Amino acid sequence: MGAHELMDTAVQERLRRLEEQVRSDKVTVAFVAEFSRGKSELINAIFFAGYGRRIMPAGAGRTTMCPTELCFEAGMEPCLRLLPIETRLQPLGVAEWRLRPGSWVRLALNTDDAEQMAAAIAKVSQMRRVTVDDARALGFWSDAADADNPLQDEAGMVQVPMWRHAIVNLPHPLLKQGLVILDTPGLNAVGAEPELTINLIPQAHAVVFLLAADTGVTRSDLSIWRDYLGMAEDAFDERLVVLNKIDTLWDALSPPEQVQAQIERQRLESAEVLGVPASQVMAVSALKGLQAKIRCDDMLLQASALPQLEVALATGIMGRRQAILRATVASGVASLQAEVRRVINIRRRDLDDQMLELRSLRGKNASVIEAMRARIEVEQREFEASATRIQALRAVHLKMLRKLFLQLGPGGLKAQLQALGDALQGTGVRLGVRKVYGETFARVRATLQEAEAAGIEIHAMLGGTFRQLNADYGFSLQVPAAPAMQDHVAELSLIEQRHLQYVGVVSALRLAPQEQAQRLLRALAMRVRTVYEAVANDLELWSKTALAQLDAQLRERERSFVRRMEAVDRIQQAASGLVERIAEIEAAEQGLGGIESRLLELTAELVQQPVDHDAPAGQDQAATVPQPLTTSA
Image 1 (cartoon, helix red, strand yellow):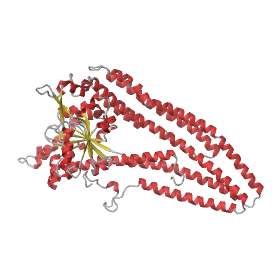
Image 2: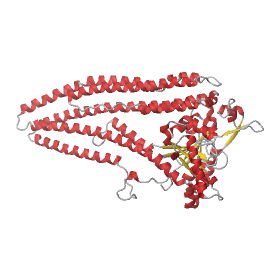
Image 3: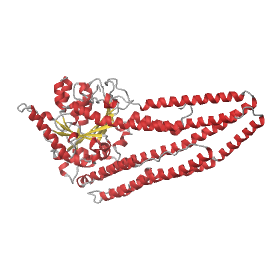
Image 4: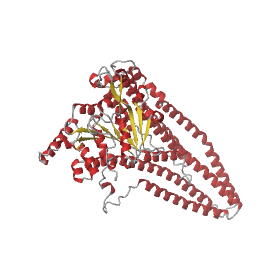
């Protein structure tokens, strides 16, 4: 497109965003459970069995003491990054600390040395002893919720996690494909970190919730599910419940049928208690699955039911995300193709007009050619006079957008959250916070409605102007549809639901410390800012697309005038010029046909589905069974 002058700034921006989305799109799966449910063991079994040992710390009691992300970032060597727990004393959230790499403790990982990797990653389990006052400041001690507080030793000290967040960067095949695993701590740590509860877990594309097969749904399990994972019904397909440790029910004194019936009964009862379809609950043994993979024991692997879980993850999470991404690419490419073909058709029409003009000159004298030149000059002057109208259109358009961007900017967001910030000031249990939350989200929602109304108004204004320009100058301008706000409003509703869950009666006690309330406010501001930025980006790209379409057709018309004047000049200079110019136009028309064919060929490559050469003949790729989430896959 660049070689044929078909690449304007708006098209280039759309291509860049589409490419960036394809390259950086991540699939985040959060593993959530109370401690000692086997989250880390399950991650070891699915992702790290190839090392012949455990990589993530797993064992009795609490092992993962801070949220741990497993991901792959190109251009960075394998490493473990640890954010000190002391950063909780400052108002910045984890997302903001990510932009400050110097604040993280960084340890290199040798992917060829399993022992070194396991020893390094074991640091996510580290604890430190602090005073009760320090624990209170860090958010791990609440005078109002004594039952959730850590135990004091003889010296009156308590243990808290040494790290606030950990990021493991590994070139694992699945992680390199864009998968991100979030291993979370137990109930107390989840509730103590608002950003984890409100931002990281809700933004995960899927959640794997682990239970213990021997206990079923305990009170603490149900508390986590209701407080942090109980979402709307349409989100249940993104919640996979895993009944782990079925090996604890294996009984050599009981027949296999009785053992299996007991496991099935636990599975169905867990689904009923949590209120999810039974198909969303799977019973596995992460421990036996890991052992079976290390020992290459196929019978034990099948008994562990781990392969069925891996297939469920592949089809339900990775498969769905790929389908969404593929649809996004297809839609973007189709829009791009239509825009470029419109420009090609404008060029083709201009060539046809020139061909008619030149053929009408055959056998005509110099006075007729001079009259044609004069007519072209008049058309050119009239066209240039339209620049005033177009500039006025741009000025009004940009003025409306600037006003809208101010509302969606940091200043507008700060004003909308001011009342909530005032309500969260001070110490002690804050009453009436839910009402202030409702008023705050009403203001934020009204801003999105204003953005949508402004988009409709700008669309109507551009539509009227474009129709007039099409009638006056033969353009083919079409205003793209204004950005839809439904997805952003839905995202805002999810944010509101998550926050209202967090500030419920139980969680209100956690908001008593001023530092905790301020962390909650910053977590909210970060989520809403993300929505605002997405809305502003959609509006900006839409605006650029509409105006770039106008710029493209203006440029094509100016080039047409230049080519027509050059043709007349050449005809005046030589009798043979007319024949040569007609031949050039015919060649140019053939060239446009070649450009269009090449465009269709290249865009078809972007949206075509990959062919599975291992599938049986005649079998559609979409119907093939996905492979389990293993290294070989």
